[in-house]
Amino acid sequence: MAYEDQSLLLKYDTLLFDLDDTLYPLSTGFSKECTNNIQEYMVQRLGIQESKVSQLNQELYKNYGTSMAGLKAIGYDFDNDEYHSFVHGRLPYEKLKPDHVLRSLLQSLPFRKVIFSNADKAHVAKTLSKLGLEDCFERIVCFETLNRTTSDHKIGSETLEIFESDNGQMLPKTPIVCKPFEDAFEQAFKLADIHPQRTIFFDDSIRNIQTGKQMGLRTVLVGKSNRISGADYVVESIHNMKEALPELWEANRSESETRKYTGNVSIETSVTA
Ligand SMILES: [Mg+2]
Image (tube, rainbow, N blue to C red):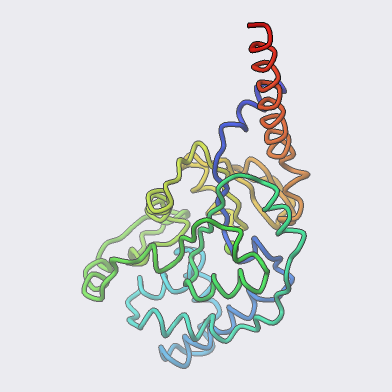
């Protein structure tokens, strides 16, 4: 069985990571600051009543994966870049510190590493740089890469389409491509040349993990302690990835041992011949 597990893990070649609340802990308070900024945007720029923004934001986030995707779905029209600079541009990035532990964990794994985030590229770049991880990833799939073809007139026409949410509600579709929707995963696979059956996916969102599982990925739920359906592994912190998945490191070691052994055999063969 151990041999089978190991051979299974040897077939993985890519690690796919969410960014926010996955590569740094929820305790940084970033998520809360981000929510405050979104609610402020809804009041100041979209004219939504202050007493309603908290509940509306929660519902949109739950149904659409991001507040922005939800706001666009229910008909609000605004500039994506302006929204991102308002919501992310004012975050206290100084709270994020270089994470040497995570950096060395990532560097000790010779798999392709790719970021898959709903956030804009400026936020992803700044966050990775503050964490000291900017050179750990081969590829970044983010808002701009997922939404290259989104245009304003397309937004107008797509809001007429509807979809069925997890709790059976019929809701207007969003023109934004983002997790947890399958089209975001399909695009990420295409853009970053990812084969889901050879990829392990890390995310703190249960819904993202569940879609990821349906799409064929091996899944690791980060920042939680309870097992949920759809998650192959659960880790309280990304720092625990080695305890949860020691096979990844063992697989590498046995691979290099195999190479060494094969080398000895070939020397012996040439001596014998
Ligand atoms: Mg996240």
